[in-house]
Every structure is written in structure tokens, then in C-alpha cells.
Length: 114
Image (cartoon, rainbow, N blue to C red; front, side, top):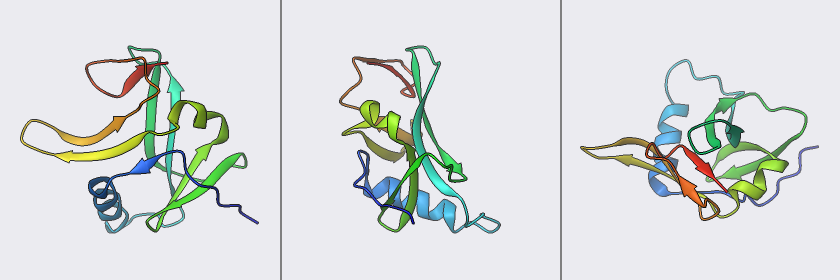
């Protein structure tokens, strides 16, 4: 039995619209979950993970606005309070991570230090 817990991460309306658009693309594998997390590396020490992936044994499962989301419990400390947004402007297009736990970020916005 899966246990749903409240997510440490929030998705903005723009991110929700874009993620649902991607999920509705022809050929999308509906068994996949949206994975949000971190991994070592990047120019500031840690990089964000955002993509579709299979659920793993030690994943926490969340649902955000009908989007099935998985995260590693250990990543919650780095992601608590983070907001994922999607920008679709002239100068930038893509997902943006607004993390209150980051002591510094790099210019690309996908890497941070705590």
C-alpha cells in the first residue's frame, strides 16, 4: 500500500500546466512518475533532478494537482519549501527552482549549495 505524505516541494500553476502538457504528449509512458530530487555535482555542489522516472522501493509518493510525484525521503531536507516554476519568456524557457535552503546558486540556476 502506498502512503501519500504532504510534499516538501510546491509546483506553481505554470509548472503544473507544462508538466500536464508533457504527460499528455503522444507516447508518454503513463506508468512514469515525476521525480523531484537532488544529486551530487554541478558547479555549486548539488544539482536538481526533475524528470519522469519509474517509482523505486524507497521513494515517497506525493500527488500534486493530479500529478504523481516521487522523491527520496533523504532529499526532503534539501528541498523543503522549494518551489518549481516554469518560465516561458523571450529570454528563458524552462523549469526554475526557487529554493530557500540554498546558501548559493550558480548562474544556470540548476545547481546549488546548502
